[in-house]
Length: 251
Image (cartoon, rainbow, N blue to C red; front, side):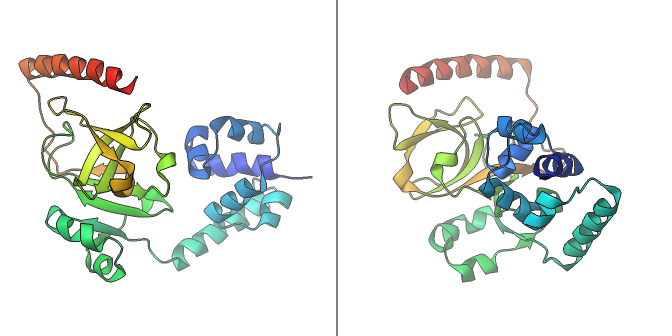
């Protein structure tokens, strides 16, 4: 008897993740999580391997032990405590605005990366993260001076439309934008500012050096932009015009 489905559900609830969040971490469809948890399907081997890596479990533990049972739960939680205490703290390199130019030349140089200041955010869990300082008002209401913590995108095909990313490219440098895929121009991505006063523009995928999907935004207290009614009315009108124009371009 395999406990894979039952253990998968137990581990998800132990972390407090929704099925959608869990599916994203395992890089599978949310519907598969439901099928596995309800034991309507057996998880594929690659899913089991990702699950084992995520929770530091062996395949035998995952398949043959009921982790939700008291005796096994205690053992599992104790293993997790020991792993947390023995594991090396994950660090996030911070790229301030003043280091942006140097980053374009040294992003692949381990010595340059090691010179960057670092910090930790334990709530992020496992992954390859980096933080970038942004300036300007193009992504309001995210204020200038915010720090965007992003997770490395290994394949441009994994980009999700309408999500925000740090885009590092040869022509534009380091920018924080919302991404739209262009149906007519497969080799280009459309970068959109949240502030509709800025016009969307295209970037060639061959020009892109790195992409980091935004996971957290860190801002200083009392720096959030406040809008008055006249500003909002003008921005809404401008946004409607840009959305209409963008739809025409994408279709």
